[in-house]
Image (cartoon, rainbow, N blue to C red; front, top):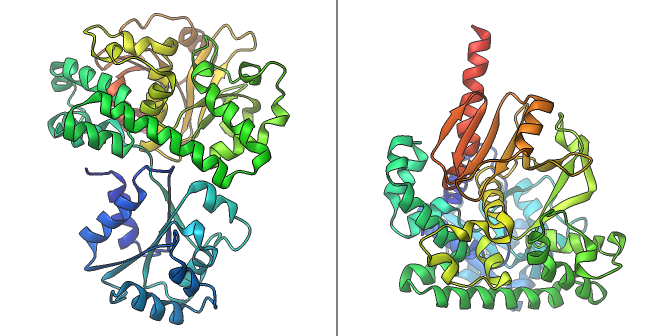
Length: 448
């Protein structure tokens, strides 16, 4: 299973100003596997330390944080030669050893020639921020669930991946029905590595659902491990309400959907816990699509999405028959929210730093699913869950704000009409490149 984050890891390894790296990501998203595989492919040796219940390893960082001594003790503990140029040092479950997390600062300052990666629970690591966290002394990457392209590669569909990446639109049109079939599977399986691996090995979607259910139970266990007891019931209420929130016509997150009379101020901490754990994506509304979008965000009006479309499908208990029927009704579940969930996942993984919001007018009679800021251009993205792309919201937005470029994604083939790009759902990982190329063409034409 090849992960696109490997390219970023290689860039980190070869960077001129490399710092120790912290690899973020939700539980069971594949951080340990990625670090070990990267070490295996790119280094002669990997010195791997897992601090979970490894009290001897934890004691290495309990005395002092002198890097010379730490390296000496790590060589004994791992039985691996710590050659700066040929050894990758990996600190896993680093939240269990705050001293190891703090030591990254000293590796950066005193031994920058060593290649060090740390990973751990997002919640656990976040707890140490401000208390020895090496702010400014580390590089950061985030590992997300598998993208649709990674999913295709795992299923030996590299030919389809090549079509998407090269934007071979005529070829894509020829194989669109196969891409839609694989997309239906992805809506059920999602991008959690264990779920994808089980399907890769067995082609058994019932076993996939069991994996997903076990993962969901594990997240409940994490709540009690990392979250203060008084916040756990509120976290559960938010987490359990997700399918109902997304199943509404207006997908704005409403506390009253969880429990009648609920007030937002009582749930702010619980919401932050879920965000810090990587278990939800919060998308805020903007009052105006103006630069910078962050200056127009409305903090108390937002939508909340799941971390993974497969987990959302499992949480909602969607039946397998919906995914194997010949028609496309799976794309319309939750009033199209599965399609929105998919688009958000693809955008997050392909362009992690892309500012993502949504827009609605004051009367809530028009809404654009996502509004993004790509360089100095604000681009609306309308998500349609099938081939019917009729609707008034995008027309209202475009007539009101006259954006220089806009996007609609659906199951239709790629096409462009004026400033509007129609991008197939299965190509949304290429959104930034497709519209970015168009923006460069427009800039070049303006210069000449």
